Image 1: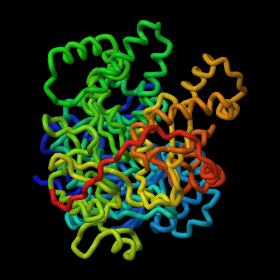
Image 2: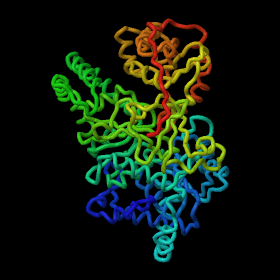
Image 3: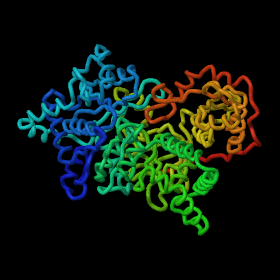
Image 4: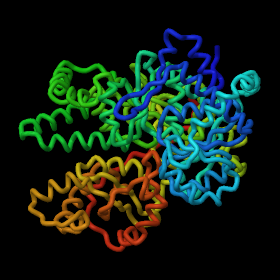
Length: 613
């Protein structure tokens, strides 16, 4: 059979009981992993469908979930899909104002939230949600309706509704609207991206052909299911029969991976950077000899090229590095890991090489919410991985590099449009059906897509030269002392950078320098600390062209997070918000110039060829 709608995955399970039917979906409760079988999954989802029909929900009605990842998300998602209701998955980290906007804009009728705190927030603004009929919770919350009431209602009415459900399912087309996923809002109000069954299923099936995991494997899920990447890959796991276990919390990811001995997971660059930083930080506590070995192993790993034939000397060095260092990384996580999917932002190529050398292969891909999301991806076959790129173009997808370098895309995965916004839809999908991604890129070696920057984030200096900040930021984050950074300088004579230090490493350095300080704010104001960072930037500038070099920096004490508003749910910079928050600091960067520039490095001009893949 051909799976065209997401609930067709249930028929796939039934048709392959010895293989795909091994699929399990689980979560941790009271310290123990609880699993649902395929039969339980289907039964609960059907009861949700019956229950929603009994509540008067019909095709096209909107139902929102605001929750952490959990099996119940899937039960509700499948239950909605089977009756043609539209799922509006919303990030649980949004502010109340952002939640109100999305819930009202999407015309949501029913809301299911995860816990007491979210329930309380919505109850407090209940009068501002005129279209909402009911609010349920996944956790048991005193005074609140529980999601299980929908399933119980459905169970009571199943006998008289089951035939009707089959008729409704048969009438649902693959073109039917499945989900409205709101963009993370790096600008002003988020846009509701309308995705059909075809959009998401075509992407899940095409990308599943590149994933070597199958029904014998299990993964841990921790990126929010409200984000299109985890959302789509969730269907891919269903298609492959890969068992899914939802992490207990963000803080428990490492222990959950080790506990389950998983075979893979998907992530975003910032989390991989965090893992690496913790490994390096732990290495600082080793003896001098072991620290020397660790540093040597990283140098060896930094030269690694996936699937490239290695000479005898390098192979021997890597074997020693693996035995002494990298095998311990795998033991600390899971020795079974063969798949780490990564997307959402650019990953430092240096880290990609190091993780591959440690036999923790990272497969970087690229896409947007509007493309369901994958347009291209590196995958586990010789000749299909190129570090520094986001891989070959996905089957069924067409890519064209426009004259100004913008990446254009066509395919069955391109969204239906923005909800209630035909004007903005027409601005990104042209008359010929090409979706304009807003990203700048080029084709490497005739087939690998490389992202050079975000079109809207590129800015011009007063001398007319363009600056692509993401690539510069990745270079700066190679520093042992820089945790987060944002390059600024639009319409200025030079580029500057806001820098949040890696304070665990900086504090260690400060102690060695016998610098006295009371707190982080005190430390970054110290003249020796400032000179230390100026020297770091001067060294890093050697890797940049003359126009890209950072001439002025500002050290900041507070980390950027989702909760404080500087990061999106996938940990990308909300540049506009950061500029607004640090407007005075940024202005001060361009009053005087510090001497950070090294010898001029000439940048090679980039060619943007118009071609199809």
